[in-house]
Amino acid sequence: MSDALPRTARSFAPPVMEARRWIAGLTFPEDRPLLNVSQAAPVDPPPEPLRQEMARLVTEVPEAHLYGPVLGLPDLREEVAAQWSRDYAGEIAPAQVAITAGCNEAFAAAMSALADQGDEILLPVPYYFNHAMWLRMEGVPLVPLPAREGLLPDPEEAARLITDRTRAIVLVTPNNPGGVEYPAELVRAFYDLARERGIALVLDETYRDFDSRSSAAHQLFAEPDWDRTLVHLYSFSKTYRLTGHRVGAMIASPHRLAEAEKFLDTVTICPPQLGQFAALWGLRNLAQWRAGERDEILDRRAALEEAVAGLEGWELLGSGAYFAYFRHPFALPSNEAAEMLVKEAGVLMLPGTMFRPADDPEGAREMRVAFANVDREGISELARRLSGVTLG
Image (cartoon, rainbow, N blue to C red; front, side, top):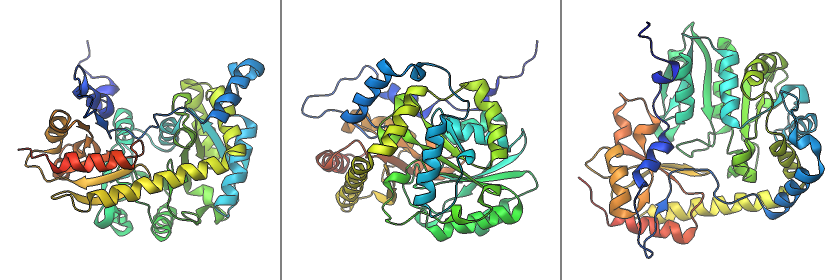
């Protein structure tokens, strides 16, 4: 018998599931309920008009229950192409759009289409842990690209890390876990580097609808040959609260989508139909509601920055979209401190060790707060609780 381990053994346990184990069996007093700032997924259902439309779809549209095209509903692909072309002042064709079962699947499909075992992917750290998990399971080494001042990666440093095995650079903006919005000129510098070296730039813009800038986050789609380099990823889950319906998108060249289609066909066959119809209706009908959601998230970001400004020992490294990233004041490493905060303060947040390689010492000093599900009062309460805790 072989002693080889399965692919999944290369990776670590899902961090959010690990954090949930910290609260298993615990009870919290009514006057101090658990403040859960561990996960970014919306906790509310879709808005009422969208739920009504989904109910109609369930009862009146037989196609909502059947297999559909592997790369998604044609009408949804066309709508994404049209709206993204408008938003980015670029040119995107429906044939350059694929719909996926969430953005995580879009990332997995993109990596499968771009890289083989032993190839390398540059990934800024701190990273979104599911990206790291997938690469490890696939046997594709991730090359850490440190996020420096302002939690921004450096294109010149990236250039020194590229080898003949490098297949892509991955950027997430607004960032998870750091929250920071990458400046357009920085994104452009990475695009130019990737194009020059003949590799892909994978740009995960899951949180694009909560970017604080009034103008487009970049101008890459205006390039006449953008699809030779750029792979764009997106999620409808956060914007329309469709997390349980799993709808995401991948925008790339038709050739790359043809390769991704092989992966998608063997994993999900097609994206969930009901979620796709819901996303299409949302794109066409919920622009004003979506703008209100963005305003609320930006207000909560401002509230958090105000609340922690005087929080002794907590250094805010970055914030934006759903997240704030901190250097904490505790003598304990973050993985121990985060678990203790549940009992000492009734606060559940994720330690920086979940967002960095195991041998990176910076993770022990960092914490991520997902504030999107906490209102202004809750954010003030979070600051009060943290100010009264001493660990280690």
